Image 1: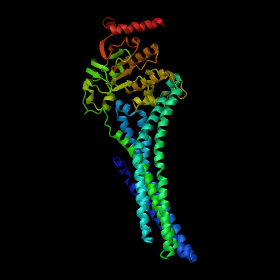
Image 2 (image 1 turned 90 degrees about the vertical axis):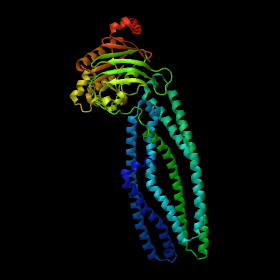
Image 3 (image 1 turned 30 degrees about the horizontal axis):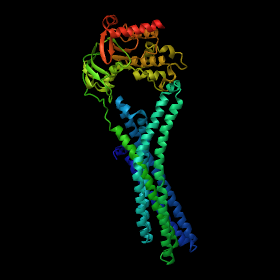
Image 4 (image 1 turned 60 degrees about the vertical axis):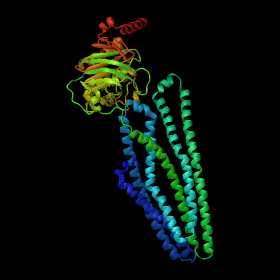
Length: 573
């Protein structure tokens, strides 16, 4: 019910669908009455004229009912599909606004399930409710009315059979409802394992872990099967029990009707009609029981969908601001730990001021907090203590889009999309023309391999850049960031797949083409950053030195240790 607002734009279709269904059910309820007339007034007295005229009426009403049924299906389809499309768009938009910590909490597999299986389940319920709910309720009410017209004594059969069927449905669904939530959770696990193995296929193959991952998938899949079987076994009891009740009611109607016919208080055709009506009534109850199953399944899905829609982004827009500086970054007593992580902070007491146009590097051992530091600048995460400033304004005061438009970032892991080379680069600026795209590729030295591709810039890149080498993916990612022409450009260890000569040439081109841009580089190799204006050295989440290379060699023991270890490695090679 909380999602009903998504049906409002399609209210006309949502009203026409049940109205058309009323026409179809009216025709279906009329057929037994017409058939009884054919038997009683046509067949038994051998009145062919009566048989033909009533038969023609039956055919015409059947055609009318068929048209109403087609219309009801079409209208309910338009309403339910539009409902699902709008809901799916809103859920996807909300997912796109969630912070990293929130998407990690939901897990990728769970979000995929919610956007696909769960929304489809709700859409099917809407479609079913607009047509089948009306149909079966009318069969129930209309059938009872028509039976009572035939003989009041049939009311006793209905009075006994209906509560029995209703109680049976209620008991079964009481036990089945909780199981649908369990099934949805097990499906999340299956999707998560599948997603991890599709994206991490190279690692799986490199470590010959196919059998292990197959067993892991089989375990998750088996758990899903067990949960589904539990539901199916329970629900499987429903139809036989309802069929027993329905057949008992039919036998009772035949018995009562037979006695009435023998006493000449009813005609044979009317008894046949009564049997048809009781079948329609009880079949309607059976179909309603199926709808209760759909409601239970959709209720579990709706709860999961609302959980996403009602989750407010942990990193939200600020009120907006006016800036007077350009390209400056400052950390004031900043500390940070990842959500739900215990122990000491990843970053602690960080004080660092980066001037406009400065070329600064961040260096440190693995796990020292380098990536965490730069992730605070575009507000991928928020600091738990202290303040981060961009262009002299606290990042929390910015609208997120405004803040991130000022920043270009090349991530440690190059993310590319299933599109052409040009389209992947144009992510940096959707309005850029072909010449600007090619210029960005030249700066990133990506033109060297693009020109050798079959279709050049129109060559399609495989999903996640699987058709490219690590260095090629990094250069396309750099070209994308260069095309954006940001005030602040961050390289998060994004040249690790390039050799030193290629990297040096890349940095030379960047300096020439992006003069005035503040560049922050995270690197593992001192050789990559020794020519930077300053190098900030991180050790266990603290800055232990920040100066040019030569000065750090004199004043920073941690930096000298890193330098000596890398020199030894080079000599060893």
